[in-house]
Amino acid sequence: MVQAFLKKVIYGLGVMLGVVVLVFFLFQGLGDPTRLMIGQTGDQKTIQQMQKEWGLDKPLHQQFFHYLKDLSPIAVYSSSELESSNMSVIYSVGSENRLIIKWPYLRSSYQSKQPVASLITSALLPTFLLAGVAMLFAIIIGILLGCVAAIYKHTWIDRASIMVSVLGISAPSFFIGLVVAYLFGFVWNSWTGLSMTGSLYEIDAITGKTIHWKNIVLPAITLGVRPLAIITQITRSSMLQVMEQDFIRTAYSKGLTTFQVVKKHALRNALNPVITSITGWFAELLAGAFFVEYIFGWQGLGKLTVDALEKLDFPVVMGCILLAAAIFVVVQWIADLLYAVVDPRIEIR
Image (cartoon, rainbow, N blue to C red; front, side, top):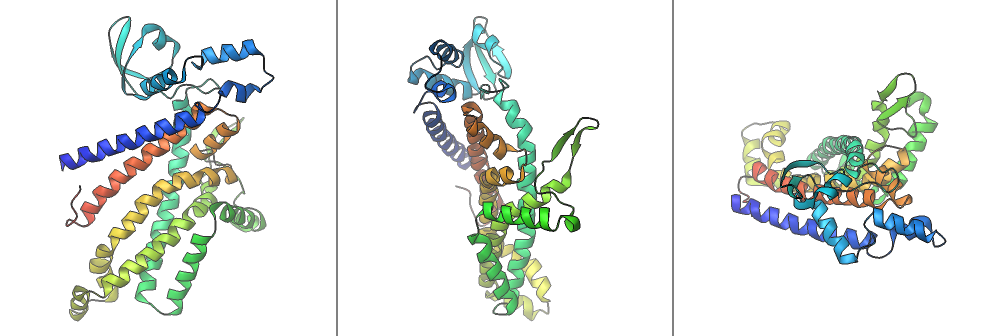
């Protein structure tokens, strides 16, 4: 078990290193960020000052290794480097050159000068909340529809669930978002009471920060449509295979009702491929949230990334991408553990 976990950790670190290399050379290795932000007609003295401030005046390989050092939880920094940065140090040893243990340092925003970590932290909760609600909606409705379709196979209920699933898979998230926002937030606004756009937190000059839970409804439905369709089809297919097994016939012969058979025997044995879909799609939702958050004005990680990309604020974009990659790796670890919990026959390797 420990050896398998260490293999997973090493593999995950390898994936993260590949993402770091790709992100760095994509956003800093293929062009000068100062030139992109100021333009070709920018003042040369101003450009040189900005390059020195952001460490872009050094050779590219030095910039890369310094970026790796910033991301590493253990590194050596001089006292002057620590004083000029806003990294979160957990423990340090030494005087002039210090060996420190720290949180990964994502540097500061080019635009607001705020630490990237604090910007991401403030946007992370709304995104996780949106992805969680969307996934919960997809899991409950998807498994329910998949079970019902399998129980009533080859009936109009089965055909209707399949048709809805195909439509959900085929339609892009941004198109579903526009339709949902227009219908429920504009056309039927007097009935639903929902707005086309809105975030979890809204700042009022008098009352301060207020929470608007209703603003999560439309983006969560939009984000959950595609995983709902996938989960419905996978649940139906897996349930049909399980329902043909001998132990299911034995359960029926003992006088158990269909509900009891599905609850106690069939569903548990059909969950492995569903868990694969759920864990994979939870990570995918974070990527899909980029477009959905932008459409609905939801102030989360996706909108933060898109806004930063529009402003060429590369440290924020790079930090968001690295966090998303780390979440993908962690979700994969959780998926492997869930397989072993649901089905003890599976061995973690």
